[in-house]
Image (cartoon, rainbow, N blue to C red; front, top):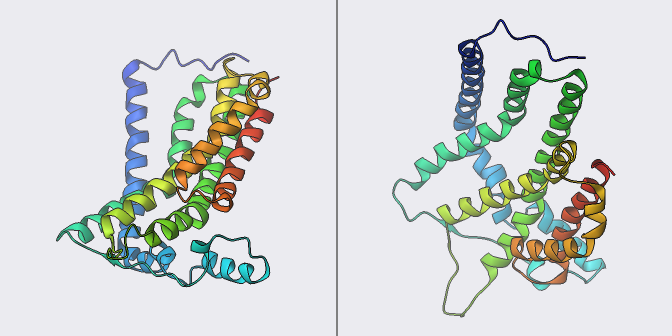
Length: 262
């Protein structure tokens, strides 16, 4: 099947269509941002600051499991509470706005991808359109799975270790609001991007750059590199936290090997 004939549309017609797409995206993001801005105080208490308290479900699960299986490192069990302070006069207001925008962008991600896909769809062959639709669908799912793992696992473990680490007994740990939010957003977003590895591999495979033999040949090298990445994400250094971060990343490598061409 040939590409649909768009010869009647001029460059300015395409530009006008792109402008409409961008306006729809901006409007959707703005609406979601305003909704999150209205409910951000509740989200801060119930979601964003939840890992800073000892009743976070991951900590309670670790405490319960440690009674049966004493394999968890010391910093993972016991009581835990992070004292978060604000040292800049305008930080709370600007973080309120920036976090609302970040949540709005993240939750708008499927809508943004769909609008861009609709814009480029007339230029694709039928099989390309079908494959791209499935690819972006699973790419969205993987992105949110990565965000969830970042929030539920990676960030709490990193926070628990770093907030409890003491270079000297004379130093009291108090985490600034800016530092907490930077770590929270960075780790969650990085995990969301990392989980896009299968989609990136599939796209590179479709244009002939990546083949399955690459994953077979460099599997041992990948294990070492992924261990280094996992150690960087979770600087605690103990085998348990290193393994729980390394395992999902390595599974992404194997999934990527399955979706590329032989």
